[in-house]
Structure formats: C-alpha cells, structure tokens
Amino acid sequence: MSGKRLIIAIDGPAGAGKSTIAKALARRLGYLYINTGAMYRALAWKALRDRVSLDDPARLGELAVASRIELKGKVSRSRVFVDGCDVTDEISAPEVSRAASIVSAVPAVRRALVARQREIGREGGVVMEGRDIGTKVFPQAEVKIFLDASAVARSTRRHRQDARRGTPLSIEKTKAEIDERDRRDSTRVDSPLARAADAVYLDSSDLSIDQVVECLLQIVAARQPSMGQS
Image (cartoon, rainbow, N blue to C red; front, side, top):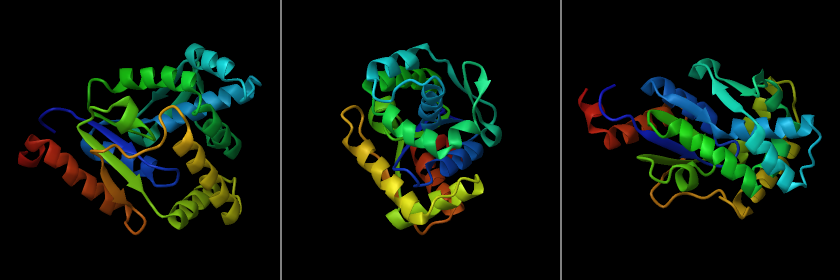
C-alpha cells in the first residue's frame, strides 16, 4: 500500500462487532491492530488477581500507572500481556469483562491507558478500536467509524461468543449485561461513549463481516487517494 499510513478509529458499543471488523480491516490494509478494550480488561484482570477493590479509584489509578500492558503478535494471533504474563485467555472471562466496565470509568485509569494508546498509534498505520478513540484518544484520526448494531443483534453475537468460549449465559442475562455496559459507558464522566461529529455511522445488524469490511475499505480509500490509484 502506498501513500500516508492513516490512523483509523473504530468506536461503538459492546457487541457491535468492533474487534472482528477491526482485525479484518487491519489484515487487509497491513496495519497494526489495537484493541483498547483488551487493555482495560487486562488491568481489570490484574485488579481482581491482586484483590484491589473496584470501589477504590485512587488505587486503580496507581495500578494502571504501575502496570505494563502490551499487545503483541500479528493480527490473527494477537496476545495480551500484563507485566510479561500472557493473559489473553484469562481476560475473556465474564467476570473480567464486568470488572473492566467499572475500571474503564475511572479517570486516572483512562489517563494512563490513553497515554499508552497514543504512544502506540501516533505514527499511523493503525486500526484502533474502543469507545473513545475518535473522540478522546485520536480526535485527529483521518478515518473515524462509529460501528453500531441493534440490541438484539449485539446480544445474540455476544451470547454466541461466550458460548464458544465455554462461558455461556442465558440470552436474557447477556442482554442485561450489555444494557448495563451501555449505561456505564454512556454516562461516565470521563470520555463517555459517543459518536464523534465527523465519524461515519455504520449499522452492522444486517451486514456480513465481509460487507462491513468492504464498506470501510471504500471509506479509507476516499481518505487516501493514493490507495485508490494503486
């Protein structure tokens, strides 16, 4: 791929398909893929392991500053490390996801991890997904996408994902957890989930992965003329 390597920000609520789509897009472009949600889950895992109270924002902030959270490997085999320990499988547990929703709302935690995210993506050539990438982490990103889906589609996707991991919940419980995550993400004081004013809104409810990726590639090409000419 010729031309400038862009910063691509993909935001959206839980279960919208951000990780799947961002990974596929990064592979097609030859870009670095960064799952910021995995960074918050990694910190939540460490807080649970170390018995740090989720009601102690000061201690959680200190933990974020002191922790070394790294994302390594190619897109298809991306691994998450905390202080040199591979925790990729552990952070998929439902209790870690629930804790991450609480941890990610702590301002001191967000400041620490946002600084790290900016450091990783500042050179461009990155697809970064999360909930505040286009509004907070990289408001200057050349491509901003807000990926959404209906509540039914998001609950169904998350339910299937948990079942594949061997941690299935009832569909009602899954929907309740997603609703609670949406409430926390949208109402937190620091960097709430919101669509950037210049982000392209895309509802993936009735689209296949390939259809969404092709749509995003067209958007990227429009921001990168040399891509369309190559």
